[in-house]
Every structure is written in C-alpha cells, then in structure tokens.
Amino acid sequence: MSPTPGRPDSSYTGVLLGRHLGRYSSRVSENEVLAILAVGGTLAGVWLGYWLQQAAESRREIREACAQAIATALETAAQFELIEVEISGGAPAPPLRPEVAREWFLALSRVGLASPKSAAAAARLSTAIGNATAGQTASTAAERKAARVSAMGAIEAFQTDVSRELGRRWLRR
Image 1 (cartoon, rainbow, N blue to C red):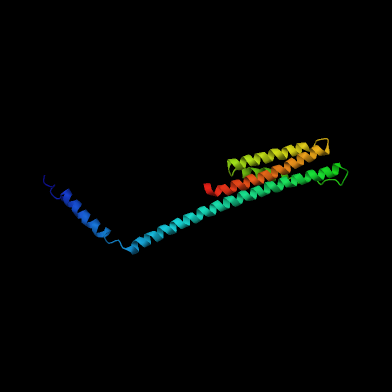
Image 2: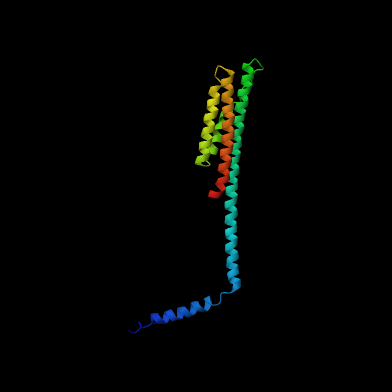
C-alpha cells in the first residue's frame, strides 16, 4: 500500500521518531541523573521532615492532655484527703476550683481522640474518679480511704496505659 500523498509512511515516522528519541536518551549523563536524584531526595526529605514534625506535635499534644487529666485527677484526690481531714475534725477543706470539671472533661476528650486504647484508658480513669467521688459519701473512714486508694490506682494505670500507647503510636503513623 502506498502512503497517503502529502503524509509520510507510518513506518517512516516511527524510524524518525526512534532516531530522535534515541539521540536524546543515549546522551543522559551522570550529572543529569545526580541532579534528578538530588531534587527527588530534597523533596522526599522535606516530606519526611514535615511528617515527623506532625507526628511529634501530635504526641506532644496528647502528652499534655494526659498530664492535664492526671493533674486534675490528683487535685480531686487531694481534695478528698482534705475533706477527710475536715470530717475528722481538722481544718475546713477549701472549695474545689469551679473550672476543675471543665479541665477534666477537655483533657479526657483530647486524650480520647488519640486512639481507641487511649479512649478506653480515659473512660476507666473517669469511672474510677466517679466511683471515688461517690465513695466519699460512705459513712466509715475505711470505705472513704478505699475509694481514694482506688482512684490513685486508676491514675497510675491510666498513666501506664497512655505511655504504652504513645510508645506504640509512632510506629503506626
């Protein structure tokens, strides 16, 4: 079959194209390859740095929320001790700061957003502090003390659970 008048044969176009591409592809130098690798490596380094910074910032925010939750729980437990002293005939306990409940809620909700395991640990701590609060209405000093000891154990367990979770978290990001 003859080529269309005014248009070159398709096999002829392929030969020209092959020669044209071959001429450029055979002249790729080491410097060009190194330049491409340098640009690619720079972009990958920037991306990795951003990713690591975001992960570190996320862990820092979760640690701060955990510290706030623990501090609020300890403040509540200390208040229970002061109330016990007051019940025993000692000095009157100062009132609990009104913002404690808000700080408690915000800290536990921030911890709960970290992961399902952190949310479960926060829920266990919240339940234990609630039980300790209810336990302070008990009629005997031994029952009130048992409730406070239980709260302190829950605070320690919360701290351990969250520390383990944060240690594993960087592996999942």
